Image (tube, rainbow, N blue to C red; front, side):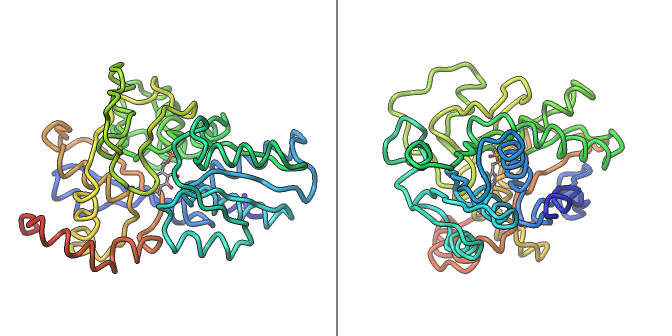
Length: 329
Ligand SMILES: Cc1ncc(COP(=O)(O)O)c(C=O)c1O
């Protein structure tokens, strides 16, 4: 059964980053999940809950709004269990993710944006409307489904605690629905309140305002496009009590971080993982790590999902050259 292979992903010591920031840096490699992302965890909890509680009948259709990874996980699990999947993706979804969704038999609807249930051309609105209009469908609704946080509270958080023998001092993770960071943070803070849980979002995303209890400016520009993270609204799956701080990063700095990391380590990281690297790069003065810290970076997926978007893109190469970054250390 597929669910027995979800989770228990490796926590790798990153020698390059540990030396660079003079502390212990560990990478939680979520691309070892069967659907190759952290989203398998939330997808399994949401699907299993729906089947167990008879919210969907045999052979029915799971419906989700997803920039790709949750959709891929739902499609994979639904196929394995004999259900169908209909996934509403935003225009920015990478070609690799679309191809994977198709390979798992999902039906795909491309939408203009993922700006929430109140925006009529968004993935969330259209997914909800589809489920409301069709029999034997279930909208997993990762933005408001408590099983999203629960998946990480029950699995990812405990894994990090055990894999570090309780030594973890910081977790840094990108924030999309907020489910990963909220579940991890909720569990770890129950073990030791002082563990720092830091989120990363694109420039002009709204979590920073929310956490600082500041009003969201009406003229806020569109947030930087970093696939998987950032929001224009605050979903129910973000628990402000589980998160200490959010750092904002720019798209271009994240692209550069991905390419620089590959040059230094030969590793291909996903876009939101690159955003976490960019946060380290641009906010390390505020992060103030000590030698004794044990810092976990949450890498939700792998760079092989972004070959066209990042690593093989002539446009990205040009942008980075034009930005004239300092040579890499
Ligand atoms: C690549 C990637 N990174 C980060 C996230 C954010 O995770 P969460 O939705 O749990 O905040 C997602 C969510 O879809 C994702 O696909």
